[in-house]
Amino acid sequence: MTGNRALNIVLGLYVLLIFIFVFAPIVFSLVFSLNSQRFPTIPLGEFSTEWYEKILADPDIWRAALNSLIVSGCSAVLGTILGFATAYSDFRYSFRFKGPYLALILLPPTIPLIIMALAMLAWLSRLGLSGQLWSIIIAHSVLTAPFAMAIIRLRLQQMDPDLEAAAWNLGGSEWQAMRHVILPFCAPAIVSALCLTAAVSFDEFAVAWFVSGLNKTVPVAILEIVQGNIDPQVNAIGTFVFLTSMTLVILAQVFFISRQIRKTS
Image (cartoon, rainbow, N blue to C red; front, side, top):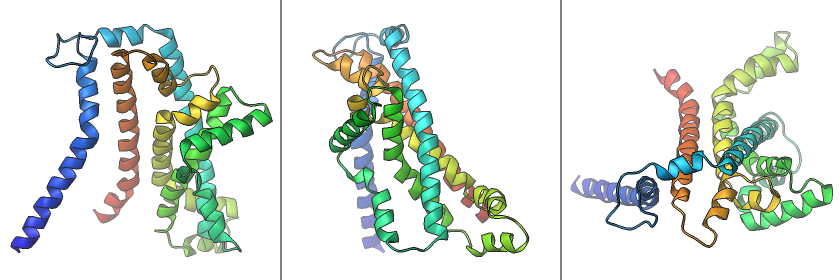
């Protein structure tokens, strides 16, 4: 009993250290974004919202934020549609080379982003789409679809495969069964996938930097600000990006586990 308690304490401390290691830089970024001094040094200067006022008055930041919202929203919708189609085909059908098919679908997140960015740039340039906002949307849809597929596939694995067949036997068409059986069952996972893929797209930098051209997103705008100098505006922008991403991730978790809580209550 004593050994188990000691092990639990050690594991708890280990998890705490991981959280400190991950979140400490974010906390310091938030603190320095409210610091009047230009350089991130201790002791801190006076409390100030100067850097937030500057980014809110910068039309380039607003334009980049709008681009990021458009890209993340469109990429989330397209990526979730692709992910749902892939997850459903895995759930419903058996066919030759299904294993390689699924491995190919899940491949993009395993490829280094620089390699993926170069490949996307070459492919989109050949199609005449490079340097447009749609270039980022297409590239991010490819990157985010595997995340949506994994979430929806996990939800479908909890479903009795005979439910859809029962709907067919009761006179429903395949589309009616999809609308009244599959989609309602997958709704929490679909909403969760939308939130998670939007967060992934909103944060992504490397691919967007290569294919965006003049259509900057927020991460690309941050890179341009920090090139060659230290600017506290980055801390303020980073705080907004962090809060947006964390909100989307938390919403994804809430929607994904909400149905499980209802089932157990």
